[in-house]
Length: 79
Image 1: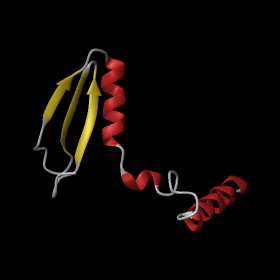
Image 2 (image 1 turned 180 degrees about the horizontal axis):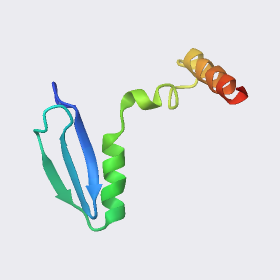
Image 3 (image 1 turned 90 degrees about the vertical axis):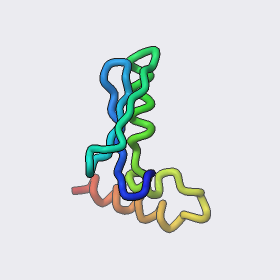
Image 4 (image 1 turned 180 degrees about the vertical axis):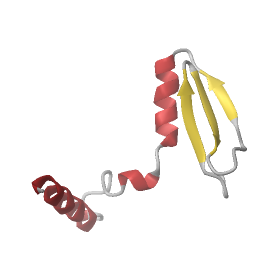
C-alpha cells in the first residue's frame, strides 16, 4: 500500500493496469502472456486484508475470531 492512496488493479485482455481509486494518480500497467494471467494477478493484488478477516487465521491464536465467524455465518444461513 502506498500511504495516502488506494491502489486498485484491473485486467483488460492481457494487460493489468493500476491506479489510485481516490486521486486517479499513481498509474501503471504490465502486459502478461495471457488474459487469464493478467486477471489472476489483478485479483490477487486487488484483494483487501479486511475482506478475509478470520478466514486464514491461525487455529489457536485466532480461535475466538473463527468461532465468531462460524456463528455469524450459521445465523445468516438460518434466516
